[in-house]
Amino acid sequence: MKVKIIGAGLAGCEAALCLAERGVRVELYDIKPNSFTPAHKDKNFSELVCSNSLKSNDVYGNACGLLKEEMRVLGSHLMTAAEKCRVPAGGALAVDRAEFAKIITDEIRSIPNIDIICKEVETLPDEWSIIATGPLTCGKLSEDIQRICGGGLHFYDASAPIVSRDSLDFEKCFYGDRYGKGGDDYINCPLNKAEYESFVAELTKAERVILHDFEKKEIFEGCMPVEVLASRGVESLRFAMLKPVGLTDKEGNKFYAILQLRKENAEGSAYNLVGFQTNLKFGEQKRVFSMIPALKNAEFLRYGVMHRNTFINSPEVLNADFSLKNNPTVFFAGQITGVEGYVESASSGLIAALHMYKKLQGRESVVPENDTVIGALSAHISAPNKNFQPMNANFGILRAAEKNIRDKKQRYAYLAQRALDSIKNFKNKLGI
Image (tube, rainbow, N blue to C red):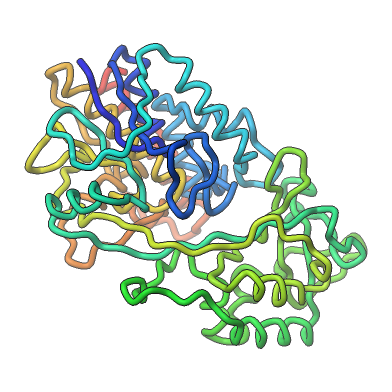
């Protein structure tokens, strides 16, 4: 049996590797390296665009950490790849993004029953296929998807700048993690009250990239540009990406506000500005962000960019197994379905592939329970919802605990253990 997978991002690669290891012949289509979307530059597959962080690795206290563990239980290849190229990031799983893409691409290329076809697909296949073209689906395929799925929805995504470590002023910054967790994985760049207020004032009036009329829509809250958040109130950044809570230097000094920088590569030569997704013009990014004392002479290796992300109205057109309601041999996966985030995207590719594999065998698949993160995301993209919007992994989407647990830490730990038991039970039902 042959399967087509359109798109070699996180979801497409996870799906391709899942099916190929089970003996399915896969044709993997992608426009790389012949052409690129506005947000992509690396010739390799599974390119991480916005950040090199896959978020928290805390299984019992963070829903994205739990989601990673659920994926590991189900045999995720991308989680294995991430461990091979991780860089220090406290309690988060961050990777050398270039190495991450290379590891996955090399694995894809090494598997005999995966055929890579560098070609733009213009119409939805009418055969066994997984559409994982991501939030920047382009050209005629985008038009065909909108025709079949009843039009597209969209939101906007923004990525953070990256600076050179050697260009930082280390007399005005220090290493350390919040509350001393994880070692010295972050570089902390403090601001006093006057510096902070001057920075916010310039940030809110800095010149932004002008959006096209069709782009002047709602910005997705989960990836809010820093200048948009700053415009909501002078103190807003101090309760978000510049919060100083839990951070002190070696002398025990506390600060009014702190920007954290996180390793971008294994060598530690490049750092990204955590939470500083932005749509400012490049010159304005240099001018305004250099107002942070430690970044006064910073060399910007990459400026932040903003782009439109497209997703379909999944509850109207998709089943809980990610297949089309009007054509159960065609599946969708990744951010185009309305799951938001690297890990969430990869998990949808994994679960869509497992569902497809069961159908290829002529057997009914089983949808994971919504007491797991994977199951809750499956429910999110398929349950009726007139105001459907993208969703990150969070404990709020899981089925409520069977007992009242007031302490949040204890409640999350209970939900996490229940989810792990449930995902193992799901794995046994699938027979994988």
